[in-house]
Image (spheres, one colour):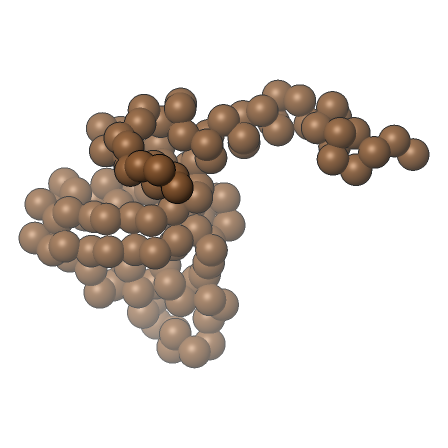
Length: 117
């Protein structure tokens, strides 16, 4: 795993080493919130690894809250709610909208959430 035991690596680095060294083409891979182990920069790297797997005829099912991972081109995104499971465009996912709103209006949202000082 990159010349280093998985036990000697951080959770995120060990996860990423596993993806790079153990997964290959023609597979079906199921990931449950892979972003929990990954920094935003590593999520971008994971997006590249996902693409390489797809290009090698693999299929991926990814349960994620990450707007970065949700952005995979041509992904079918299922959004689960109390009343339904729906296919939604990327920009209409709750995770995209909340993140975009926070990035666009950080000061206002922090004021609303935390109150004035």
